[in-house]
Image (cartoon, rainbow, N blue to C red):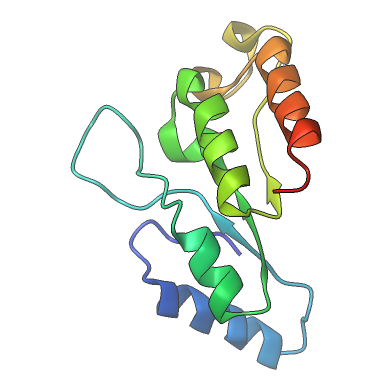
Length: 127
């Protein structure tokens, strides 16, 4: 369940609870940024949503740093911050040649950057 860019934590949780009441228990929350005031990034990645959701619910939470920032150069650091904060997973746009990506080229990372993120995951799996 992707968080709407203007949804509060409680609104997001309530949406998940509605889905659960309707019989779907396979729910993973996805933080992809909230609305901000700056035009330099698409959204503001709400890192504190990760520990909040983990502390106050039983839902898994993943983070989409590609969508949140809209800028490929931010994806690696936002991925690492999300991992340190306790995310259960990442949703990252990767392409061998990001400039040739059919969509969202500005937020797509290359294989080398993705490899560094994977190495960070493997080296810090006890976080």
